[in-house]
Image 1: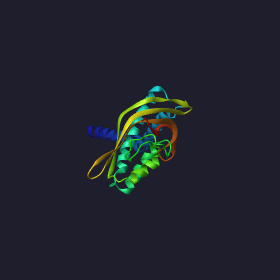
Image 2: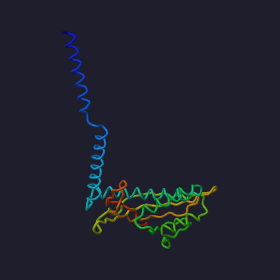
Image 3: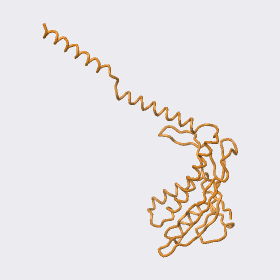
Image 4: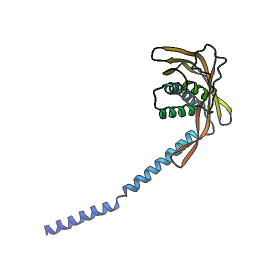
Length: 221
């Protein structure tokens, strides 16, 4: 009698185990559903963050700081671009990265890699400056920014467009194997703009998002 009870108990336990396994959800399907839900949630957050019709003061301050970082990146990229020893393909990539910092492809850039004390006659465009760097006699050229600050906070100019200004001081030096020469040093004002542009997220999703760009680099003196 005892053995019979044991056999029946084992059979019941086996049935419970088999039943519980059959009731478990498909892990693969659950992961796919969870991933899709996370993607939808992330996309919704991005839309709420970037696709708003207006920017409030806290967001404008954030974009002002992003503009400062883009200006620092501009100086770093120019220094890299000027190095005569870098790979041609890498140089082309840096050139493209420089252009992407600006709102217009051929922005006015009042900077010079030719030794000069005059700033009023310099009216270079971005392409002109890059060509000047290409033909320079220096092994590399160092672009350094100091005293970077926001002199005119971003503010509404028109629908979907905010403008402002940064202040800084550029110091440009030419470097050869034997010498380092100060080429140009001046105070500058840099116009910036925040506007909405189309940006791709993944392969089939694009959003109209707020982005900040440099507009032009003007000389103060």
